[in-house]
Length: 134
Image (cartoon, rainbow, N blue to C red; front, side):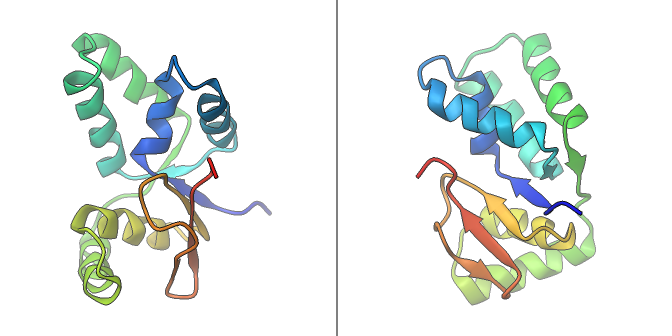
């Protein structure tokens, strides 16, 4: 039985990085182990591809489609939203980070890989946030 884990959009976006091969390698190896992601992660990636990286729409859609194919999608439902509000209040996190954390918990993950959240933070004694680049 494998450990379930979740990746944040900032990890997935390193798959496109042409400058930092170490981070790209780490992101690629995580994706090979089939992470969980949420619709929010997919659309954050799409937004960065279009706005920051100025990708052609079809290339950006192809990237997120490949991300979807390589991952398990955790739906965002009422339970995820309700729990995200609780996490937001309890841990004083950003709203969208709270929703990603809630989706990871709903998926039964014990690790959330993110470069932007608090490394080592344990949520509800079940989910540890890890920066895989440290």
